[in-house]
Length: 195
Image (tube, rainbow, N blue to C red; front, side, top):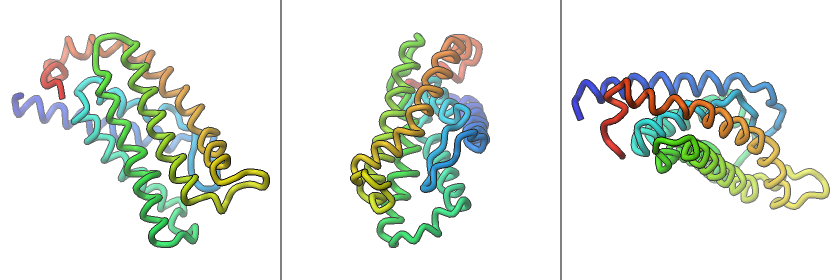
């Protein structure tokens, strides 16, 4: 791959990470006390990078996005929840670094049809939910509402925002997937390198 193509990819990836972060700030439904929100398709830019450039570029962008989401989590008070250092570290890994980095795995479904975009975005949403659920079950059961076990609370709590987030992500990714062949055709740097 030409150096110039790498720079173009890096520039586009930087813009998509920035777009993802900005979209995550627009969360019309953000009333969950221990984090979680329904955003305006904030995962989609990272999914598109992965579908355009493959898993390697997708994971790189997703990791950078995970660090930005972590910083935002601390700015919103995550550090003041009274978690032990070990639980805080585990929460950082599960709820931020892993949960947001797996979005880049949408590149596994890289291809020419919209079905692959649907499958890729659905796959990464399920993976992200899995990490949030695991963290909630293992570490946040103490905040379970009356009548819930740690397991059922983690399922309910994380499903309450990840289900709408998944529907939005899959729908927008499917709608934008029609642009992927045009982007690959018009921009040579989108065609190079499969993963």
